[in-house]
Image (cartoon, rainbow, N blue to C red):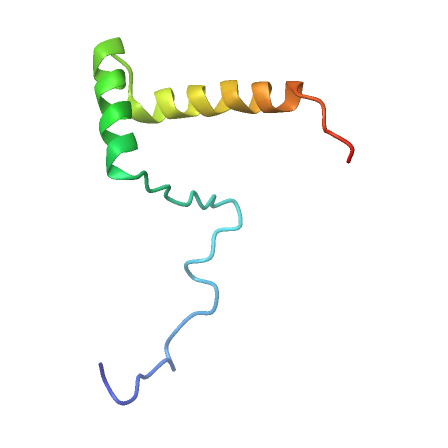
Length: 70
């Protein structure tokens, strides 16, 4: 790394794109990753599609259970 950088010819906001969408990575534990990859392969699906389907189903299930009041 240089001690100093020359930004005199730089343009503010040149690489800024307000419509850009950041998608953060999700890292699965090795056993879960292996299982999902195998299941996706067996069903002829993309792993991402399978995981999203699974999460949506679990969100529905979670939302269908009433909250307990202690």
